[in-house]
Length: 349
Ligand SMILES: [Zn+2]
Image (cartoon, rainbow, N blue to C red):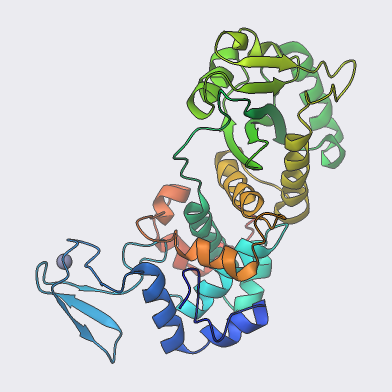
């Protein structure tokens, strides 16, 4: 069996249809989930990490002799406590890993035959697994090139009621001090040109300390850092080979541009506008994580990833992460199972 197999080398999953058919068999879905969870084959208790247990085959659960409790393959993963089967989870994971513009909770709910509210919770838990876990810095003092840029996400004037639009414009006129855009949320991104990878974060403002602390955290000192003329980047030349392209004059100045990030912003905005429509700033970080996951795992000439590879990579990230309904919404989980929970709920909150 090869290292990145979901199933086995004899029967690679190529399509969504293939994945659904394969995982519709509970035993096959279970076996695959176990392989992802414990790649070496040694099942350990998610609570005490011990391997002293017995397996109850008929129920597909283990009994741990140390903590005297049962556990399933879902315990200690984003799927813990979910009443939905692995077949539904695997399909949802496949879809979010591979649909270029994401998938709304309405679409997923219909596709899986689950309520929209449950699908919404599922998707957010999958985004939790998608979250990047950066272990190295971008760029490098030997000529590494990094783009840095910010964008603003929020309600578009076009879809807004006239009064509200006018009010917002007036407020913006009064209170916009170069770093606050009312009704919009700032997102900062960095792109490593060699790796063709991005890192992104929702930020409270675009002030100098906010932007530069992130660059210091994620970029090697001495790297070439390309930005626009925003004042938040003033003084960056102390630590980096900082070069500016003045967007008032031109967008590209030789190698100095932020077009890689502009491309990422347009993908992000297409997903937010086209699929998710109205994202609350509180949840925006998670939608950004989702887009970053697909961008950083897209097929390139040097790295020809396919749908199964992306799915397998995502499955390898579901363990040791949890997102409870209370954390996500501030509400008790009972609200999720209440029939009225769906009523009047906007996508995605
Ligand atoms: Zn245990």
